[in-house]
Length: 238
Image (cartoon, rainbow, N blue to C red; front, top):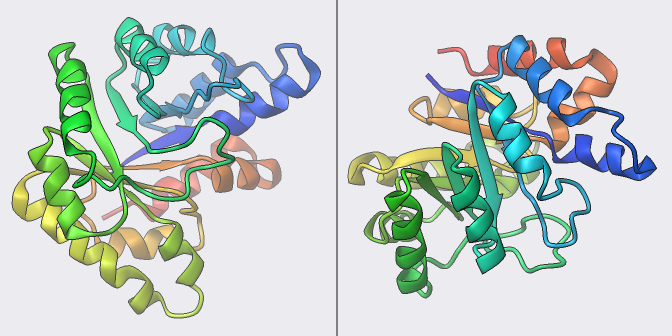
């Protein structure tokens, strides 16, 4: 069964606009869980423009599902993750001031560094996922580097879905099949939505987890968060 992890960065962005605690991040995360979400994802960035460092341990203590922390593995990030001990850490190759993730790791060129960092997290009992483009070579290299999972960067799929969904999914099926063969877990995320998620899951039903934030929070503005999560879960039914 594919799990839905809700990325709540955008909720923190709205909160930070007024400098107060409305909307309440913890309350929102618990509402997501109550509606059926099976995980909460956060991506704390160095400038704290949405998720703040102080949010992360409070979320870990409050929620009952899995916490997934995404980020570039700077020493500050590594320290935060080791102190918080989430269920999963997702390593992304984002520059400090980057607006949003826009590519996966070149794991081949960064294998030594990623292997060392993965080992530190795994020694602490934290599942490690590496953010990659849909390339079987990068998937295999992530396995060699010691990752437990890869997360496929799905923007290319989302961008092409409405034009030619068969072509849009093809590289992702290849990468997902490589993950299945080499025995590494499989996550996916970035611009997955109510429009394109069901077909993605239909073609790659063995995926472990999807992490969805921007589209889901936008839908929630119109539908409400509980109805929105129910609709996303419907897209993930076998």
